[in-house]
Length: 183
Image (cartoon, rainbow, N blue to C red; front, side, top):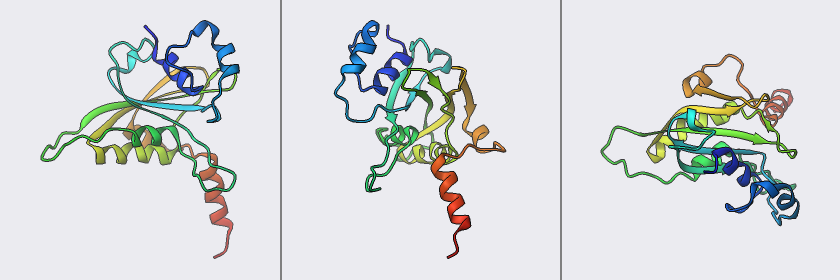
């Protein structure tokens, strides 16, 4: 069985789902992917987080990848978490109070195939909390990788209430430029 990490790794390089893992370096070198090889990949899933490595008893609802804006700023950047949420199929929850519970897993692969820190930025935490409800879902747990290749589990409330939330480079630069500009 292919592990969830291998599936996400193949998505990172836009590899076909049936590629041979033993020859991945050769395949990556020869891929015709024009997407820029995504760094962050997110998946929304049903199942226990303890099974993330094996992929057993996990049902993937959607995948998302980060996308960078173009030089002209016409095409906006998108974070993997937001992309995965936007790809969720809406559920018909008319008249029902209960939301469909699921989790999200975010990981980052470097160009050298090293797993890196993928803690969601504060705006993504807000999106993870608010947006799925519009489609009939509720994300309970957020799993992400750190620089030591560990998988960290946090509830959405823990991330919302953290004292020093993470802000993306854009958010830090944009907020600082807004503070320093005189309108």
